[in-house]
Image 1 (cartoon, helix red, strand yellow):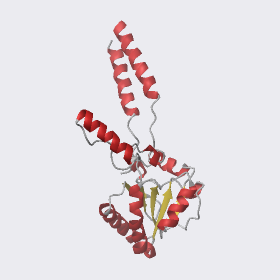
Image 2 (spheres, helix red, strand yellow; image 1 turned 135 degrees about the vertical axis):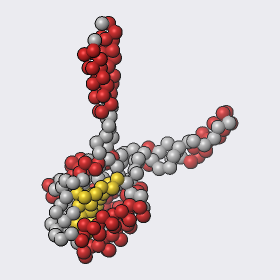
Image 3 (cartoon, helix red, strand yellow; image 1 turned 30 degrees about the vertical axis):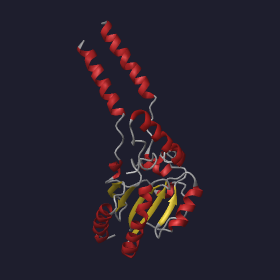
Image 4 (cartoon, chains in turn green, brown; image 1 turned 90 degrees about the vertical axis):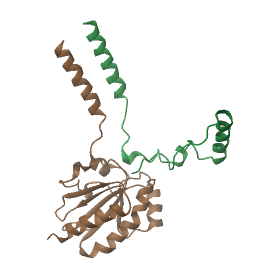
Amino acid sequence: MNRIRLITLVLALVSLALGGCANVQAWEHGALADYKMNRGRDPIKTAADEHVYFSREAATGGQGVGGAGCGCN
Amino acid sequence: MRSHNKIIIIGLIGLLASGVPARADGQVGKPLPNLTDFALANHLPALPGRVVLVDFWATWCTPCRASFPAYNALQREFGERGLTIIGVSVDQDEDKYERFVQKLAPVFTTVCDSTQGFVTAVHPTAMPTCYVIDRHGVVQAMHSGFYGNTTVRELREEITKLLEEKP
């Protein structure tokens, strides 16, 4: 019985947590597609970050993708 | 115990279902909401008896920009035979819309749904999304996204078929 209560409680908490999620509709992506949302918009900073990662971790690339966040197509 | 299991399973299915997005092609086979019922800047042409292509686009959407030359070509090719293309911008900033339209100078009609009332009613799931509507006002096809020549080829086939039907 305690197990059932625990599962019910977990489900209720998960439901509450998921209730806080919101779907961003396709026509609301304008803010995400804004230039300011692009983390790599400063090429000098991006190059400096790349240099740090390469020097410290021998890792390079993977800093971002083309475009911003509109998710078009 | 069994009834509890059922409740848990139903609850889990409900949680999963809540995350499934609505399908944009739910409009196919039905009329779109009436454009004139929404506060759209600009004047709309007369649509009864015409084959209409309604395209939702935005200034921030790169594929939308790429679709404009294709829609220009379709409007020029099929306009006299009865096609009307209406580009519905979903931009909330009407200045951005104006600048964009002045720059690209489309030959088809464009309107700005700055209140996003019309797009909310139609509920497309991607930008751009276009709906091909027959002479009787019923949506016959929907295209989510713009994939260059592939989309244009499909649109041309659908439009040609619909234009052959009597008003």
